[in-house]
Amino acid sequence: MTVYDYSLLNKAGEEQSLKDFEGKVLVIVNTASKCGFTHQYDGLEALYKKYKDQGLEIIAVPSNQFGEEEPGSNNEIQSFCKLNYGVTFTVMGKSDVRDESALDLFKYMIKEQPFKGFPPSDKTEMLTDYLNGIDPNYLKDDEVKWNFTKFVIDRKGNVVGRFEPVVKPAEMEPFINELL
Image 1 (cartoon, rainbow, N blue to C red):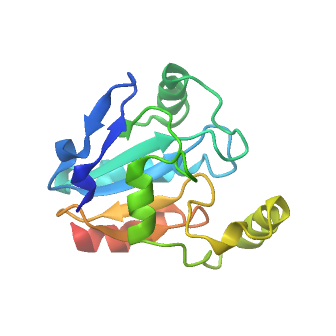
Image 2: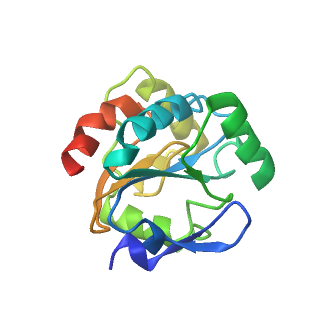
């Protein structure tokens, strides 16, 4: 099984097979417009522009599951990303990425790349304290923890990396470059 066995809802709300991206290195990231990590759109767009001609594709999957930080409609999300961050990579339709209601793709990626904790960063303590305040058991499962969790897929469709929200897109560049 690979990510190519799954589909996502596109911005029009129609299923789009990930087979459409076969042979590319993918970064699949859950996003939100009103999050403290929203500025990562800039870094994701920079990576995309730098490496798209070498086969990188970035796929954003907006979700309103974390602090209700993505309240907009699919059209509003598309406009926000273009107007505020100049996003040219693929932004899919809003979907759930955590718990029972999560997309099957996210359940698969989580199984392939479980949560290993937050790496040290300037935001790690703040995010850890916040999530522990929501639920002391929140950090004990493998689920997506917050907006801007980034999964990296190799050209064969295998989930080969998981980068938590505290990891800036530029910090993923060496890993992505090796796959290209």
